[in-house]
Amino acid sequence: MLRRLLVVCALAFAIPSLFAQVAAPPPDHPAKPKKLPGTCAVSGRVVTAADGAPLRSARVGLIQAGVNRHPVVYATITDNDGRFEIKQVESGRYEFFATHIGYIEQHYQAKGTDPGDGAVLSLTSGEKVADAMFRLVRAAVITGKVMDDTGEPMVGVNVSVLHKPSDEEREEEGPRGKKLELTSVSSVATDDRGEYRIFGLKPGEYFVKAAEAAESFFNGQMQEGGNETVLRELGSQYAPVYFPGVLQMDQAQAVVLSAGEEARADIAMRHMKLVEVSGRILGPDGGAAMQSYVSLSQVGVDDWGGELSSGTDGSGEFSIKGVPPGSYFIRAGMQDKGKFYNTRQKIEVGEAKVEGVLLSLGSGATIRGRVRTASGAPVMVGRMMIRLQPSGEEDSSGTFSMVSKDGTFELSGVADGAYALVAFGLEEGWFVRSAHLGSEDVLQDGAQVEGGAAKGSLDIVVSSDGGQIEGAVTDSDKGQPLAGAQLRANPEPESEYNHSRIVRTTSDQNGHFVLKDLPPGKYKVSAKLASPVPGIPSVKSEPVAVSVAEREHRTVDIKLAVPKSE
Image (cartoon, rainbow, N blue to C red; front, side, top):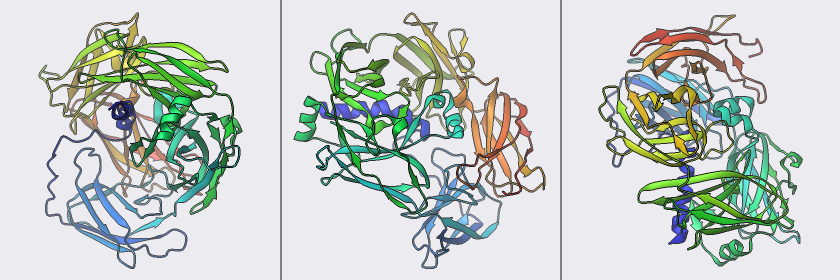
């Protein structure tokens, strides 16, 4: 029972990160979008980028663009010659892509392999698009073996592939991104031979990290066995290391992959004296927090698989063994009576045992609030979640709460500090129009918690009366439309608390773009075009100032100075 609870709590910790990347899950048994009898059609081929050979059984899809929940989807597979055709498509804007096992997914008219590359496909009534061509790049692989200091294979070691985020990726992450040193791309556990294989990697530079963990996951399931139980009790005697076997990230050797390459990275674990971090967790009622979850994560490294963790006993006590020196965030969390409680603090671990760590799930402010429309009526919230993200910190956990059907919510254990508000799960077309904690404008100045108290309740007003900015992106020299340009509308004035209000889209094959569902206000609209050469920065436009009122439609044309080599 405790093991299952640990999994639930661990997943609860992961919810904010997951919601930051994908839309909230749909309600139970959602109605499938109805496909009207369309008049459009698309056809083309899928081939290999290396030699143009046809790719049989590649999947080709059209997904309604700008719709996070229940988008209309059309799909097919290629024939022996790599050809495909999708008929009876309704007019509209679509994400258009092709994928095949062993290759990197490619979007329509993409120049590179980054997820943001590629153009939206706009179809007008009766339009036929023929000869669409996808040239898929073969994915790379990192494989290897993890051994102990005697050369014996190590089983169940978590191996992570990480990369250093680019300046553009840090910018996308907002204030937190400025302090990220490494982010996780993928991870697996070694098998009974101590071997691992991580596939589906894009060409680029990576770092490989190996950490012996007491919690082993295979295919999303926690594995319970004698080895894991004993390891939890003893703690690992092997420090987490980076390839080829060094303790510090700045000493790690990068693995540089080209398309389709299979690189080998064998790792020798280092037997060394590690320390124990122990303490006690108090629950919301001030008593022992039994069956709560405690984890340590390295500051500056976004590596879920590399976390050290433990549960609490009947006295609320925990012990995490096998901890190497470094800076960590220690988090504790539990679920009780339908509510999530979590807290965190930063600790430094040296060569001596760290004892007496005390975390209270009941400490900090309790912030109650309500989600409503401008008229004051409750709103259909679906599976809406409110999260307060610590401002400008490497830690991404934050404090979160699900919104009840009547629009109310409660955030518990909010530590002193400044927070940005992030809301997930609203119905399509709805957005947070305003948010006030007492008299404070949370969307501009953040939510401030001091002395274990907040200045009032959190009033969140949502609306579906958004504005829209559309236009075209063209080459400033030739005047030609630029397909696949990435557009951003940044709120003005921009602060570390309104990063989540940035609205993004991509231009279509005609250079046309639509930024919709914009909260009323001032924005700076800019465009960038990714370089087809890895490591070469994107071409960016000068930002254009635009003001949008409720339900107002504005037109803006953006010009990019594209180098002639492009």
